[in-house]
Image 1 (cartoon, rainbow, N blue to C red):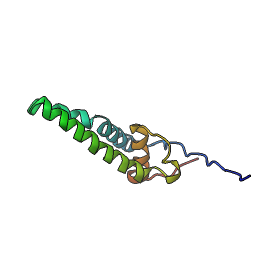
Image 2 (cartoon, rainbow, N blue to C red; image 1 turned 30 degrees about the vertical axis):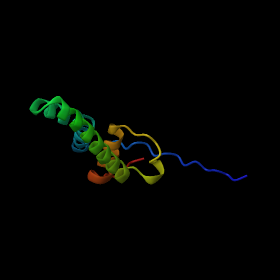
Image 3 (spheres, rainbow, N blue to C red; image 1 turned 180 degrees about the vertical axis):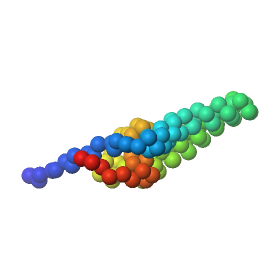
Image 4 (cartoon, helix red, strand yellow; image 1 turned 45 degrees about the vertical axis):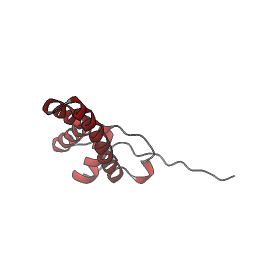
Length: 104
């Protein structure tokens, strides 16, 4: 009988500086609300038929952007777990923008 070893997951990194926290907050807001903002602007400027198609298109585009950010930032062994927008933003900022030493 083979021994299956399950690796422990790394916790979501904690951001220390205010600059890193602010960038993570902006990225989270971008990931969460861009679809609705684009749809609202399309509805205001044009028609609700165009707004519905714009929401569908922006939903697809934001899904692609979210998955690219997620696959670049989260370690390969942890990609099977679900992360919300805050977790994706924290991982991306800590690994790509604010590279800080982790004190464990």
